[in-house]
Image (tube, rainbow, N blue to C red; front, side):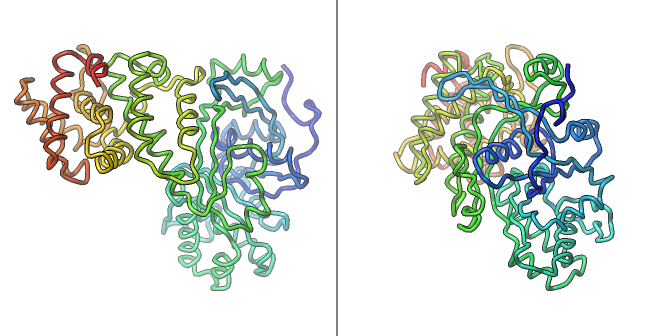
Length: 482
C-alpha cells in the first residue's frame, strides 16, 4: 500500500495559512477541515489550516508525515438514500504539537494572512485556571494558549485593528464564543497585560457563538484495512462521518461577507440568533433519543437503528416526534419537518452502531432538559398530556428498577438519582395502589424536574396507569397501547 503524502498523491502544497486550528481529533478532521476543503473548491481565495494539538501523540506525528493529507469517509443515509463516499482533504499545511513546538505555534501569530481561529477542545476545554502563567510554554488551558497567541499577534503588528481575528469555536457548550471571549479577557487581566491589548481583543477580534452537529465515529482498528484499500493509501488520520452536518454561526454581517461558508452547498447557516436552532436540536434530535432509550431497551432492542427498523418501536418514535414534539415548537426559519427527516435518517445509519445503553447516561437530567419542555408545552397548548412522552417517563421509572428479563441493567447516573429510584421501588410491591404511590413520588421529585408535577391529578393518573400496564403486560404491550 502506498504511503500518503503530497508527492505520492500528486497534490499541490496547501494554501496560504489563514486558519489556526486548536485540536485535530476525529470530529474536527471530519467536520471543520472537511468544510474548509469544500470551501476551497468553491472560492478563489483558498484557506490553509495549521493545526495545533496539545499532545505529541503518534497519530499526529504520522499525520504530519503525510503533509497534512487525510481522507474523510462519509457513510450513512441521506434523504432515504445510502451514501458511501470518500474525499481527500488537502487544506492542512502543518500539524504542530504545542508541547514541542510552542515557539513555532506563537510564530504563526506573526503571519499577516492569519485571520480565522477554529477550536474543538472538548466541552471542558474552555475554562480559566489561575495556575496558568503568562510565562508558561505552554500554559495548560486552551483559552490561555489563545491569549498568549493573541498577545504575540498584537505586539507583532502594533495593535493594528486590521490584524484582529475571527474566532469560531466548535465546543459543545452554549454560547461557546461568548464564554471563550470572557476567558481570554480574564487571562489578559490575570496576567496584567496592557489595556491596549484588552481593547484590541474587545474591539478587533470577533468571537462567534456556534452550534455544530455531525457524528464522526472515526474508523475502528478492525475497519482500517478495508478503509485503506478503498482510498488506496496507508492513511493514519483517516476518519469517518455521517452525511448529516450542521454548522450554525452567530456572527455579524461582516463575517458572513468575508467568509461565505453558507454559499458552498453545505448545511451551514449564519444567523443573528442561534436559539431556534439549538431548541430544535435539543427537542427533536436529543428529545427523540432520550424518549426512545428506556422504551426501546425494555422492549428488547439494543441499538438506535434496531429501534427505528422495528415496526413497533419505530412507529412509537416517529409518532412521538411528529405528533407530540414538533407540534410544540414555533421556530421561524427552521424547517422542522426536514430536520426530523434528517434525524430519522441518522438513526437508521447502518454504519453506526449506537447502543441504547451507551446513551442512557444521566437519563434523569436528560429527560428534564430534552423531553419535559415538550411535555409541558403540549399540555399548555392542548390541555392534555402527550401519552407517548409520558410513556417514556414511565419506562424511565421502570428502567431504574435496574433489571430486564432477569438481567441487571447497568445504571449510570448521579448517585442521588439512582438512590431515589432504589428507595422508591423498595417501597413498591407491584400492586395498583403502590404503583399509584410510586407515580406520585416520581412526579413530586422537584430535585429532578425543577418543579412539582404531582399537582396535576390527570398526569398522576396517566403515569400510574402506564406503570400498571408495563408491570402487568410488559413494555411491548404498553407501547402498542398508546
